[in-house]
Amino acid sequence: MLLVYTQKITPRLNYIFKQVCTRILGIPVSFTTQVEEFIAHDSLKMSYSTQQLGNEFHIKSHSILFEQGLADSDIHVQNWEETKCFFFNGDKSSIPFDIFAASFYLLSRYEEYMPHVKDEFGRFTAKDSLAFKHGFLEQPVVDIWAYKFKKTLQVKFPDFQFKNRAYNVKPIIDVPMAYYFRQKGLMRTVGGTLNDIFRLKLKQLYQRYLVLLRFKRDPYDTYKWIINRQKHSKSKFWVFFLIGDYTTYDKNVSINKKVFVSLIKSLADYCNVGLKASYFSLEDFDILKKEKQSMEATINTSLVASRNSFSKLNLPNAYRNLIDLEIKEDYTMGYINHIGFRAGTCTPFLFYDLDYEVQTPLLVHTYHLMDFSLLKHASLLDKKQTLEKVMQQIKKVNGTFTPVFHNYSFSDDPRWKGFKELFTIILNSENEN
Image 1 (cartoon, rainbow, N blue to C red):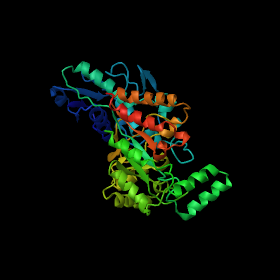
Image 2 (image 1 turned 90 degrees about the horizontal axis):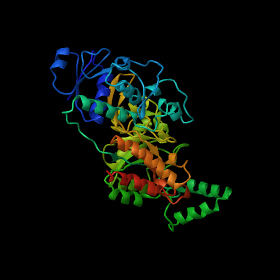
Image 3 (image 1 turned 180 degrees about the vertical axis):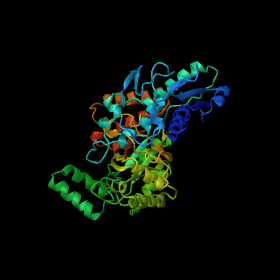
Image 4 (image 1 turned 45 degrees about the vertical axis):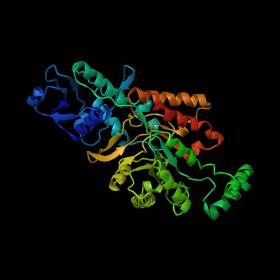
């Protein structure tokens, strides 16, 4: 056990030390404000304060973990060996940066509470993030800092046996539209037909009726392939279904269709199934509650996890709604068009509510790559190299790689050519250790 001496034990300090030390490094941690207790402890120990007590392992503390509320301060990001860091604390500290304060800043999404310009869907953008501006978005810096901390501790306490964790994969498959042509109802089918004719999309019109007449499989119906991949993978997939009402933003099949219900149940036999919250449910608690109840009635069990449409995430309200509905896990946090680590980590973490200054029970799983972000690369080779680059970053810290694909990513559409292979590469990466 690591004993931390500090002058004041705050919720922020307790939260971030347990994330870095226990969740990432596997080291139990406790705290004391008593010098006598600290001196008597004969195992791992460190002081976290503005002044060093003697010659103990010491990290000079930044004020952020002892504050309440938000403060707009200039952050100076500096190079630190192969990575970047901020909250420099000088030469008298065992580590030149306060990695706990910096980790808290990133994991709490402190910057997303500050005034910022949102995109057309009301989202915080990658380009507004500290990580993007200073070139460390593509590194899981919180985990890298944790391993640097561990390495320094090992020098000070060579007899202590540290635990090791293993790289793993947690694939996500989004299903915003279960079928492209099937199960749309008479009005949507007629409208789609007229649209094909008006826009001279004769090839699509031909394909539409081959599917409707059961001569051909629907292009979005890739579920047999998904189930087959799940059967041969040790990673349990999360499949998120959109079941909200038809709107401008959400255009899935109605949950009242027996075929759609049957599809969800069949996937639930092999994969974990979660709710893809509809666009309007993100601002309306009653709609979200209704969708949760509908999904639970479909899968006949409590809903564990959700993901938001369009990866829209307004903090802290979006997460408070999930907590109020007793949804335990969220998989929304990430950037659609940028590969990287929105919260600076590849380790799941509990959401910390900065307004209430409390650690919540909601477990946040950030995703690090969405299939759309790979489309900017023209060749399959470039896509593979980009994918390999992000996986290597996560393997270095034995973290969890969470990619997001869609059911249609595995279709025969030329746009998604090679994405089955990319998904398989990700699954196989877990067996390479």
